Image (cartoon, rainbow, N blue to C red; front, side, top):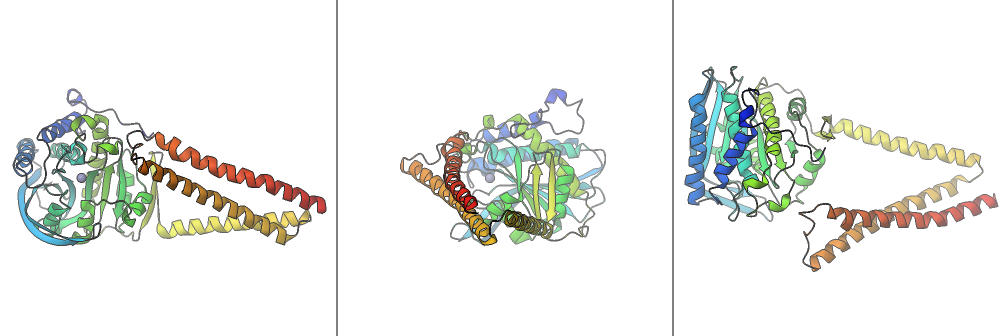
Length: 440
Ligand SMILES: [Zn+2]
């Protein structure tokens, strides 16, 4: 399941797959962008060449667009400043960063839009194949597919190719606080990468607005999502951030944040080139984002979401999404806890029928619980010690390109230690138990 990617659709199969996302077309865009080399903010490659590549591609789509669509195009140059609570916090000041923006919607104008965002700039030493050229490529291809649809959209989709993300989220801030289309946005999709290939994971949704999760679980053909990732990411332990934060905090817009994670060792390095982006990955993310964008854009804005509150969500083996409100999840957890305590009570009743005093039973239960906790804590220390040893040997991330090593370095030793502690103690406990019963 983890490795399975859809069969990519090639140009030659286009006629037999009308209205579909063509992975090979998207891959061409990845090559066009990465062939410019690294595109740090302010460089000629980023501000001139990359903007030209995107503009040229967008215009070639506009030329062939079906007559039922209205398309507007804009290049925004924007300056501003904002406080950013990233690492220890900073004031982020920017001048003349660029956004390439195209909006597609019905001929009778709708006042509501859905935003799809990526960034075309890179860190200084990387061609940025997966981060974030591939997302730009996917958006260009989705734009082309929608422009060829015979039916007009209900509302608008705004594709934002922002030109300053790696300089800490500047261009998205310029767009959402200053662009004339920003006020009409009701929801957004953000496409990011901190790895090349694999499956894109939905790792942030909201804030609140559970209808977004509903749209996701109803529309995407290949779901992969977990609110556990959201908890971890929003706790701040991962030193990274995405434009999601900017749209949420400065635009007050709810949205969905996606990223690729597989082969994370290429992230922000010169290895992050087009060759490391698999066609199947483009097909998968393309199919998902096309369906999701079409679902979101057809919602009856502005007030169509009676659902409120936060959601607990996860996918089951990539087949479907389970989602529930936080309240339902809490009730479920508490009932499982109550049920467990009830079984303890039932067992104690049964044991006292055998003649063992209730007090002794509870004491033994307590010891067992402590032993399990002890085994967990010891394996935590073992894991930390292994990590420390690898750091001292200057091999801290040596497993990153071969994640199977995690099994041998951490998982098996941890499980073995837990097993050793529990089986050691249970031998002793068995002797205690036997002597108790002989006394009785
Ligand atoms: Zn990025």
